[in-house]
Image 1 (cartoon, helix red, strand yellow):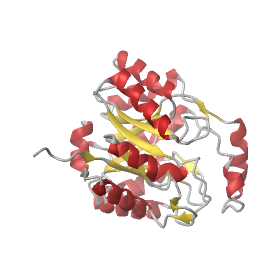
Image 2 (tube, one colour):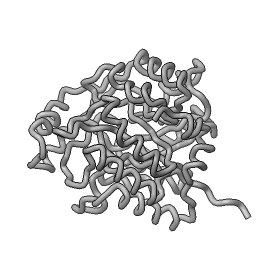
Image 3 (cartoon, rainbow, N blue to C red):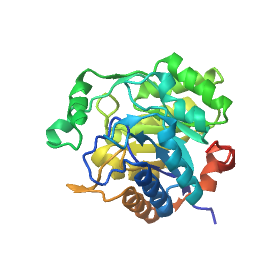
Image 4 (cartoon, one colour):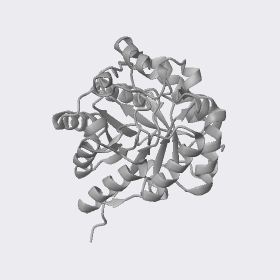
Length: 310
């Protein structure tokens, strides 16, 4: 009997600049992030994608000293793969953005694969109150925001991360980002198989229509054949529906409060673990098995949790 497909669940525990504090359940302090990450891993997440926030006002920060307490606590409590952001904030330089990944040398780090408009201002129509004063202005300013990820920026992160044994979750928000990834693979700067996170539903990137998902899949197949690992990230209300479609087509999945604050129409998710549990129910109903952290390591050819610097 053929073995079941093992699906890697990534949980994006707390957002960066694109997740203002519009939910009381979004973890902000190091203790909250650690507790949320551990609970998500216990629910079935093999990978934890982590940002950090200034505990005073919730602003995203790439200060390694803010990352350190929750990285250590999560590592001590779970064997989940730790994936550190190199996205940080569009207002940071690339050297600021890569500080945590360079300091802690994780098994996995995220890498945005192209510059893009990053429109968050539609959130102003849905949310009227914010916990921190800076958040409303931040959303308004996204009308004129470009998230810079030039070829030089990407190459800098690739070279420095690879020197540390870190592999990457390649975040592709549009079709052109797949071509950018293929370019770097052709130059020998990306190891095979790449772990491609297709992102749907951010204004400025590809939309959340099922046809968009199919277009991403067809393009990736044409560029990479069967030599890649695919994962689906649907923003907002598209989180579970697109992850379900992708999983049925053979993808891995990503959920978490960074990507969506919701668990159902008009219902805020109470935790990251709740979203992980929900997508796990879906996967098992599709007769798919959830990958363990060690199975994720083997699939993605990671260096191992004993070879990180935290």
